[in-house]
Amino acid sequence: MTITIAWIRRIKDTVELVIASDSRLRSFGAMDQCQKIFPLQRGDSALAFCGDADVAYPFFVQAASSLNAFIKTRTRAHDVHATAAILRKLLNNIVSSWDASLKHKTESFKDTRILFCGWSWRRSSFQIGFFKFIDGKFVYLTATERLPKPWNERYPSLIVLGDYRSSYIQELGKVIARSNTYIHKRIPVFFDLQYEPIEALNLLLKRANSDYGLNLIGGAPQIIKIYPHSNVLPIVVRMEKSKHYLFGRKLFSWEKVEYPIVDLTFSPVRFYYPMSYVPRASDVGTQAPIEGGVSSIRRLIFFLSSRGR
Image (cartoon, rainbow, N blue to C red; front, top):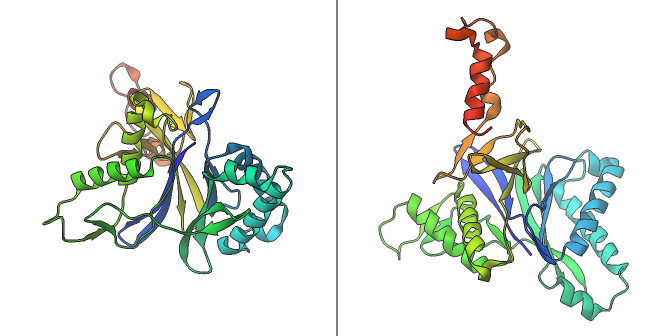
């Protein structure tokens, strides 16, 4: 099982879509380094899921293969709205090929939600929705989540799928309250979500490590962003100084990344951009060596290693 969230982050005159999830799959025990968010090669959208992995993983493989095989879906000539319809047909074709009874399928898929969201160039806005099994087939829905009082999104966008939704919303309310002030609980407060949903997810996952009542979720958060310029950006997650994760997988000590790093050891969370520490070509070799002959490049390497890379 899973908890998967998506929302639109608005800052100044820009917007970006953020998708986050835990990294646990359960079968004979818990496996905590499983990818649950899958960017599509077309660049403007992604899939994620909670629930039955037996249908989600085959669907993700077929979705990637099918969309890449057709020039209009591969090149984004088909908008995300049209693509959602194609994915719905593909998903239902896979389900129909399963020689199980409708009763068995309904029971298997009752908690399954498959997130599909991305940037619509036709409508110049983000599309956030999910597939849910209803009356023998998957349908595409766009139901947003209400925040606890008195908090309200200025433009509702938050979707929370999977297990422990009420517990997550409670954690989110606490995070928002710490970073915002208000006059009275009876007065509605409208604001734009920033990175509060990530911090709330991290807090819930920390609780899951010690609370067996939350054992369906676990592992490190995994995060991506989607931009209006139709590009997906994966985010590296720092849980401790020497522990970094990408799509739920713990990075090896020798791995170097160019992706931004979100540091969850701080509240509010902090972002680092490894590429910003790389010197410009015009600066390489122009700085005088410091004592002991250590160049600016070596200082850069030391700086990055001291931050846990």
